[in-house]
Length: 309
Image 1: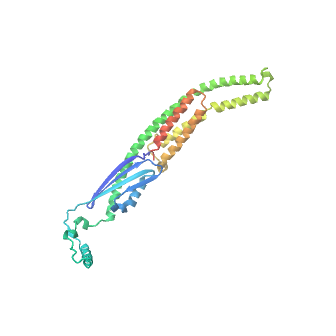
Image 2: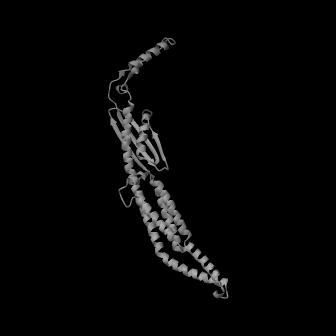
């Protein structure tokens, strides 16, 4: 499954202790880069959240924000006895220095019913994990939808690449015939220059060497069949990577799916290499234009692949 590295997801969970909300944003990156924004009270949940993210995300810059609200139980304020005793001991020490120091008011020694219940790390960590799982689920769905759009765009470009290759292959026999005629004229000119008196005065070895030299240069300059064949092979591999021919992935392909972006990037480098070679061998204006159009399409696909996980 092709997934984009750009998406957003959110989750929320509630309990008698309060609520936790999680927002997760991802953008493209060569590596996995996770940035947490957690309240100090929830720092203990960072490890659990990192585990949840690591299960499904392999690449990308990830910003995960967590907010929480403690429940208001409506309990009446109660006296914190331990705190009152501590304050009394400190007040006695202070009055040895300042005898007329007033005692604290009763309201200052009271706490709300919610605060008296304490903060259970296990409960809040579980809530953070549940909210993060919801956010990551939404994130994955968004990444798959965007990944499919990117795949469709690249497949459309691949179809245009294939059409250009077809056009060059269709024109190739005519170009070969034209250059064969040019080669014949060049050979006649070369032989005439070597022996103005006529071909009969050229020895067999000299004639063979001259013909071999010109034929070798011709074959190097005009033969682009190999480049076109490799380009077709790259297009077939691209379609395989993007899953255009099947919706069912094997265990092996699913295991390697996280590196699809890197594999696509390498594939586009190879396609660009073939387009460059095609341009350098161009013997007709139509082939030069084809090479330029191929490079433009390959660059468009490469830019889209930068967002693929």
